[in-house]
Length: 388
Image 1 (cartoon, rainbow, N blue to C red):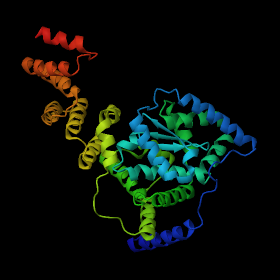
Image 2 (cartoon, rainbow, N blue to C red; image 1 turned 45 degrees about the vertical axis):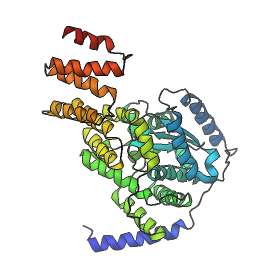
Image 3 (tube, rainbow, N blue to C red; image 1 turned 120 degrees about the vertical axis):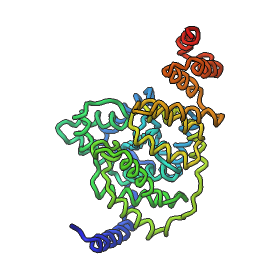
Image 4 (cartoon, one colour; image 1 turned 60 degrees about the horizontal axis):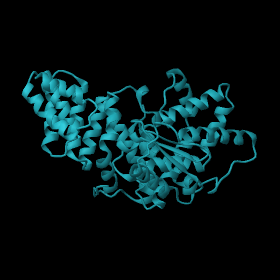
């Protein structure tokens, strides 16, 4: 067993080494980088560009202007001179993930927005990926895939994983192992990414804070290690790595500001698109994670009406003893705020129907149809109302 004082000494030595090493770590490729004449690199570019054309037509691609402009603005700010080289795609997927190919195609999952408490934390993950790109880690990784026996299949599976499309589990695990960066590459990306945040006048402490959020979510979910996010599996992480990054950032840029300042930009995005962002998370049926996220969003200042609504959704879908009462209470609280989604009235109506409280069901069904006259399930609800 490593004794505490020995571990502390080891951490100090590791942090000092990291400080010294980062002074020599910089971007390898310049802005405007084009592939070399090497046949493997040209071939890879062609494969990825063909995929990018297909991605542009994907049903998973988020096209909402406010959401995409918000994400692209963060990427461009962190990327600096590399902004014009990066093409950003926001993918509808509840997982925590971001990735970047050697061609400059960056993909960000909506689950990253849900799991961040500030724009700086989103920027931290973005900076980490940009560092992999400018250090040519992504090119080296795909070259490693290309040289493997199942190269073509692994590249296809890897792309599928990063965009959230379905692939067989065994193939996914094999691809994740092949796609994983080395520990040295991860440390380089952590520290260079933190430097990019500082250069963009953003909080470099977000480089480790975002990982603390993910660790808290894992602990609250009480899940086995094999069920962690795709990002965590392809970007292997542990508490010691987070500690090293924190120690380096504090030594380099000073301690974090203890004053909590609300990130109005992210809170505005969350409030304007919360239903869209959270409905996929609810559908994962990972209730421990969802509860952790709802508590986090409430502390951030997300509209209470939608927070209560999703508590209701969580309890309704979980269906454990007592959850029906908890769901009904949450929906009522949502409605009392005056900003409840229309679905809160419909779902509460169905719960009253299950309780055989016909008058209660009629009351909330009627309000729902007034708010959503073109609801797709209008005929079914009217049947219940007529049936009485």
